[in-house]
Length: 111
Picture 1: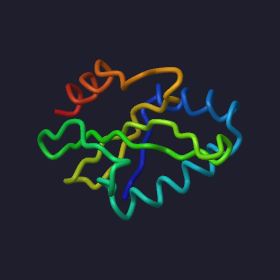
Picture 2: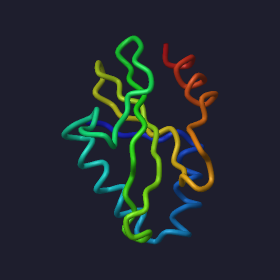
Picture 3: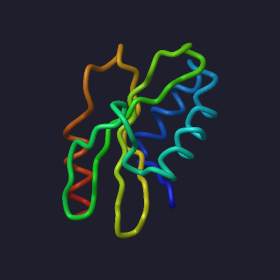
Picture 4: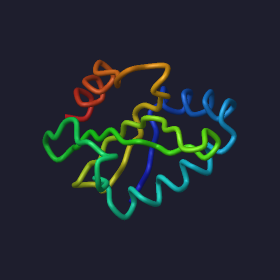
């Protein structure tokens, strides 16, 4: 499984890692999970869009520093190339939902 990040995601990760010191390790754990089960399992993963072999998934990312509170992470899973590209990362208290325009832009560029 290959992983990549959109530039906006990298900026969000860097900004949030300053606030939440455990975030880098939490991301490593999250990558291990989605590497084995790309679509996730249970109620913490939701497939938002499924088009042309690309699935956009929103998931809860548990942050140890926040002691159980969660961040939201949006990523794309491409079944053909077996790649996961991280699109967005945000705390629920900063934004109520994912950035749909960012997702549409990503899909437009990939299809």
